[in-house]
Length: 114
Length: 109
Image 1 (tube, rainbow over the protein chains, first blue to last red):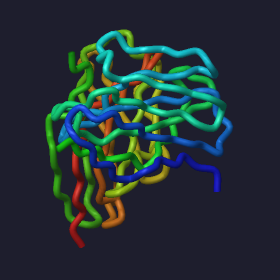
Image 2: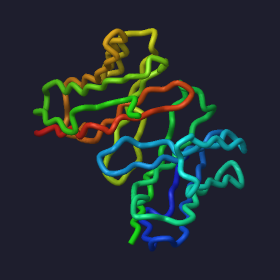
Image 3: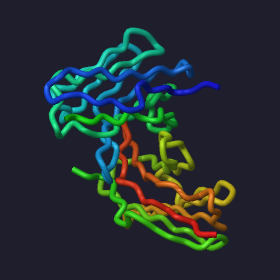
Image 4: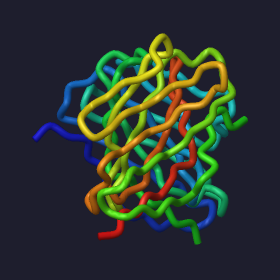
């Protein structure tokens, strides 16, 4: 089954220790997104890639970086996690990135910062 | 800046009755609206959408209504089933998507 896969599902890191979350897709979609969702809040778009073109949201902290080495994989790097970065991180993909494009989500990675 | 608001964090409905989930938005540039459904331990999955030029879209038991003048949309599920119990996210789209915080629907047998 074509799908969006996120590893690990649960990640624990220490305050200030860099962490990388990964996302892979078998849908061959052009666009990949990273969202941050804190408890009882709306998913917040951090950035997205249209192919290799990186698009950063204006209010995404510099602490968050992303890499997309190929169509299938996209990584979220948090350089120095703070306690406020503890959240669910959702990866999503879509074919073309237009507003009518359905986004397909992975199951998320829950990040805990100690 | 929360452009999409779902003011009811939870809703409980009896099986067979209608579920009505509400959503308000502030961004008049949105030209497409979507509802996503999320089960525990899974990512959100697309449920139904509506273009801003329409006021109603129906797909089986699910109907979405859009009132542009009020900047309000609603999702109706009828009849509700226990398997519909999930968190429902409303989203508005214009270049990218903005989500609401979600409403947890519980359908009781």
